[in-house]
Structures are given as C-alpha cells and as structure tokens.
Image (cartoon, rainbow, N blue to C red; front, side, top):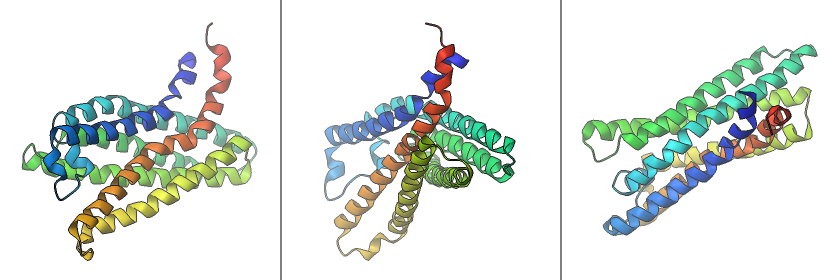
Length: 243
C-alpha cells in the first residue's frame, strides 16, 4: 500500500482535469446534437448532462472524477491527521481540529457520491428521476462547500501552531477557493430562487448558467489547493516504491 501513495495523490489534479473535461464535453455534445436547446436560452449543466450523447460522456467522466474525489479526501484526511499527531506530541490541543478534519472528509466523500448519483438520475427520465437529480445536485453543492469550509478552518487552526512553507501556500489556496466558492454559491442560490429580478429572461439565464459553470469549476479545483501539502505528505514514501 505504501507504494501506491505517491501515485494516488495524482487523483487531486485528476478531479480538476476530468471534471472540467466533463463540463466541456457535455456542453459541446449538447450543442452539436441538441442545438434547439440554445434557442432563446442557455442550457444549465443539469440540462446538458440529461440528454444523450452528452449524458453518456458525463457518466463516463464521472467514473474518473468520483473515485478521484474519494481518494483525494482520504489522502487529505491522512495528511492532516499526520500533522495533528505531530502537533499533539508538542502538547497542542488537537481534538477540535481532529473533528473538523473528520467531518470535512466525510462531507467531501458524500459530495462525490452525490455527483455520481446526479449523473445517473437525469432530468428527463420521469418525475422521480427529475426530483432525485435536483436533490442530488443540491446535496452535491451543499456538502462540497461545507467540506471546503471545515477543511479550511481546520487548516487555519493547525497552521497557527506550526506552518511549513508548503502548508502556508496550501492554506492561502484553500482559503481563496473556499471564500470564492462560498460567495458564489450564495449568488447562485439567489439567482436560482429570484431570476425574475432581471427584465431580460435571456440575460437572467445567461448570468445564472455562467455562475453555475464557474461554481462547478471551483468545486473541481479545490483539490488542487491541497495538492502540494498532500504530495509533500506522501513524498517520503517514494523511497519505499520498488524500482
């Protein structure tokens, strides 16, 4: 298992690369096969991934993204736990940070499972599938952003006591992504509920869809914020990998 560590840490950038590729592929295929979906409006992510062949492409990419999300959060949990163990040996109280780390990991993994679920249950496969897709979409964004918040707070607390240059850079990156994602999620929620404030329906939809794509991209980007620290954590294991 030790030899797998340095390789599995690359699941973090895989989340971003495969996630963005899934968004681009589904949008492009929807445009090619369902151009009527762009007449007088712009399709949401849920719309583009609910019609073939875009839905097949998205499901295929989720076979990469979902396991990578799970592995990334497990490695992040282990890296944070190792840091907390070192702090605990110095007499620093780490119980609260330990709980924050655990909750962030659980929420992050649940978010990955929600993402897989919403790719399976699509908008146009009947009323039940439609409702499940909406619930899973809401659950994905909610659990993902909460995971970011718990993880960032944990990183902030532990870095108050002991901060290496790698951890300091990781904290700044996590905080930046978390703050931006949290703010954008509130804007997205407001638009989801109150798009009627726009006089032009097309402009409202365009702003809403743009917000959704940026928010989804940031969710896929968060693992990159923790990547340097995770890679540093598994780095010493490289010597254990057989040549």
